[in-house]
Image 1: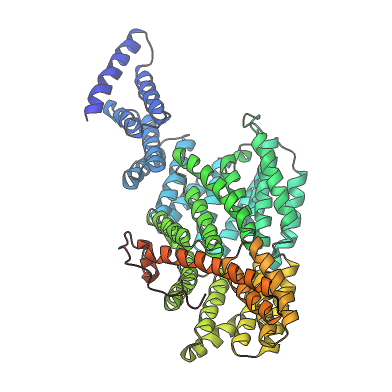
Image 2: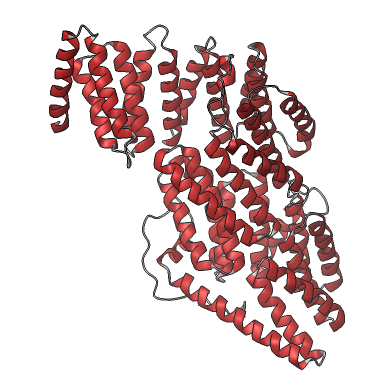
Length: 614
């Protein structure tokens, strides 16, 4: 190439100079090209094409095997992390892995090539190629503690993604025992922490206690100790959130936020540990910061602090953009997708459907770039589209989206969430032809016995759905029983949105029964809580009830204020409804199979009505 024709003569000059000065010539030209490559890679902005040309120029000199293998690894790494040319990256990494196996005492290149290549295979959905590669690397790395621990973890992670939790747990157990044998309590604790991820909620507490004791008693450099604490606390927080225990998690979440502040002030230039197995790190410090933002967003969304969720989402996405300029690690895209999934749900609640739809489209684009990401998040994408369809009153499309999501998920909590929302679609539709399906769904999420998941939040939501059905069927005493159960559960764990929904529905029941005072006692706090969240639909519903209640009670001024509020909420929802349905991305509601569409045709205007909301 033209660039090589410039660089090679330069290196030949260096070679002549090196020979004249009695330097090791091959080392000199190699270091010169390596220096050029690193200069281009670290330029601002990085000049990746020129970096790649410099590394490719190494092969013009017919280098020795060690240099050849290392250069293939460097090229594969640069192409994988900084370009979309995954096929060329794969070719170089495969060559690096093949050549390095023939060279004695060349562990770093050999195992880094295996690790990166298996990561690339997974990204390309070639899991059957990744697993034997990792198994072979694990088999031959037993005398290299750092790489043995890292590769075991990588294979366990791969089994987890495939929902093969038995194999994942076996590997984590092997890793914990290996770390104990080589005297690394730090890495042993990492593996024990990871075992928490594979346990059912009821089995977690004994292991949490053991891991907590090991973390607190472990003596090592401050960075590693705080890193372990962050790891342990992240897993603890996510287990509470999976269990829907939003109030109970607060002390752990506060500790986690304090811990990440501490770790961000520590310098990385601590003395390296003497035990090679202790070099294993579960996540870089910068990634930990994003992860803590992420679990904070998850908590805020579940608790109904949606403005706080927005604030931390903005911070996390800004941090992610900075990191992705220098690092194309797949976990960053995963963090981005999970953040967007949560903020999309917040937008739908706060009455920003058009923005939510554009962010759903953004998730589609991210998933198009990675088959693995799409495989792991396809069910969530269809669930989000189902929620969007409910918000714009496209109930047939909502049913289709939720049905597609159920087909794609094996995650029990997500399954229960989808079924709960699908049941609400059938209830709102009131279609007799759907009654059999509705009762079948309700039987599978019966909160009174054999509820399928341990989530406190989802069980409370199941009681609400039962109450909603009883309300529509005119069985008001039964509805009140279910809704009071929801209130009891949601108050116990600060589930503010469920509390607001239950209060306004109870208020509606009392209004229908003619008990206006009791209705007012329910609707006023519902409105206050909905304003705090803010939940636009509950505010719309509450303001309509307050208008009618105040009329019935003879409070003319209050009735007028409530009517004005209702008019304002109606206008805001109507404008957002029209904006969302006019977007080209609105066509996503028809997508129920295969990969997400890449392009969307423009809409002529909204095709749905707000009548049911207004």
